Amino acid sequence: MGIEVKHLVKTFDKKVILDDISFKVDDGKILSIVGFSGSGKSTVLKLISGLLEKDSGEIVTTGGDIAMVFQYSALFDSLNVFDNISFALQERKDLRGKYTQKELRRIVAEKLELVGLSGIEEKFPSELSGGMQKRVSFARAIVTEPKIILYDEPTAGLDPISSTLIEDYIVRLKNETHAASIVVTHQMSTIRRTADSVLMLYNGHAVFEGTPEELCREETPYTRQFVEAAIDGPMKMN
Ligand SMILES: Nc1ncnc2c1ncn2[C@@H]1O[C@H](COP(=O)(O)OP(=O)(O)O)[C@@H](O)[C@H]1O
Ligand SMILES: [Mg+2]
Image (cartoon, rainbow, N blue to C red; front, side, top):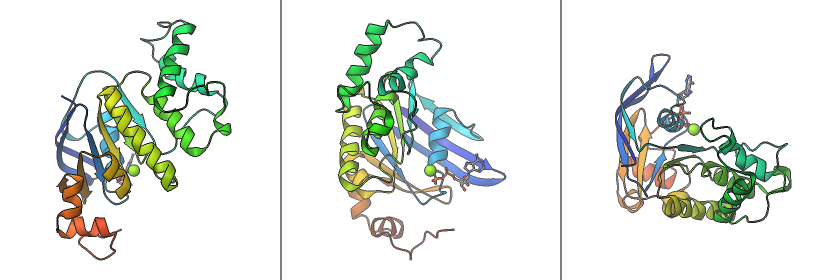
């Protein structure tokens, strides 16, 4: 299953942001959503995760948890890494008290290992680099064993090497969890390294849908403008 979106429509204050958007992401696959600022990428993620209500259309997802990873790692500064990660389990009413302290230690250690950060449980966010904080936020996102992972610009603001690391962890988490993932990004490197397919939004519509190779190869005015980051083209920045 994964994620299936059919004829999704969303308006804000009578302005149509998403006008009949449809796509599918299978389990174990990554869809990259691209487009200018304001094209509705974050809105798609918020509709899937239930933070926003759609106007019409259908969103069908595999049952189970949906994890959201934001551009800013959004860790609690006053909590150490262990507490930041285990918080995600303890804030859930249905999971509260389910695990002993020892089990929580084991689960957190397991997730930290997955993002290459074993043994940093006692550190505070201020003691970590931006890239490490982001990886801790990944560990926190997967602690509830989500079936769907939504990343909103996970590599924005990172240097190229930190971006590459984060991209590789996105792929690793996909392989480990077999979740269906969506990665919103502006970066070609992130698309190339992570995505199985790409959806480009403009003016409420999907103006391209295909593989990363097709995005680079296809000579449509939209794909060319995006790949070349050209100012001139059919897409106008408002
Ligand atoms: N809660 C909201 N209320 C009103 N307008 C919103 C709201 N959220 C987003 N918008 C508008 O919807 C459009 C798409 O926003 P967004 O999905 O954040 O774009 P993107 O993530 O592609 O940059 C923007 O014009 C934005 O101003
Ligand atoms: Mg956004």
